[in-house]
Length: 263
Image (cartoon, rainbow, N blue to C red):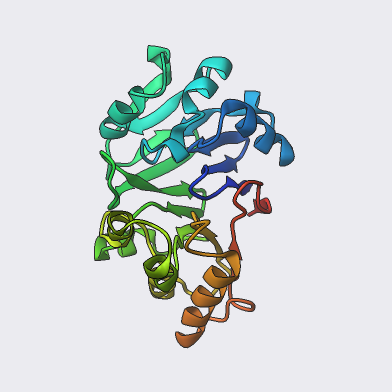
């Protein structure tokens, strides 16, 4: 059995929970250890039962609580070399035996999970998305990328669950309060995906056979849940995918867990 839940999603903090046949992991821990513990409790999970923590990249909204969680609950951390180097600058001391380095674009096995970390485009040292192959199901986590190339598209096809960045509305970003340099960064190939980009990419990879799609990492300034949902839904509809009948489309809450999905 698979359980999946977004614990938090947005520029304030990001974290995802995945369970497969009793093995429980977190992907990223962007809030303090105390908040992460409380978020897990809200979905009925004891943080002491977490078996591992996987990191996508070293930005604070993804790793803030990772160091303390590893130390306090003796949880191993998995990261590639670049992320580990960046993370080590803010993590504090972590037991050597709890540091596990994986290679991007290479499969790794953790207990009963087959995991593929694939390279993405972001202004961090070595950012990745993740594909989790769990029995006959596949889960894709893809946020914090300014570009999705053909290799990534081919890699993420066939998933049952997509946790997918829909960071900003382009018009809202352009007319909003951010500085010119900040806008330029977000719109760049190493920034973040817009609602329109998310919709176009999802239209390319979805089959419309009941996939769960969670729109994630929304900007609190340059986006809204309603705008993200409507933009992506309208784009999917233009490609013949009904977001209410053929798939399950929703937006991840910023500070609280979303629904727990069971497969």
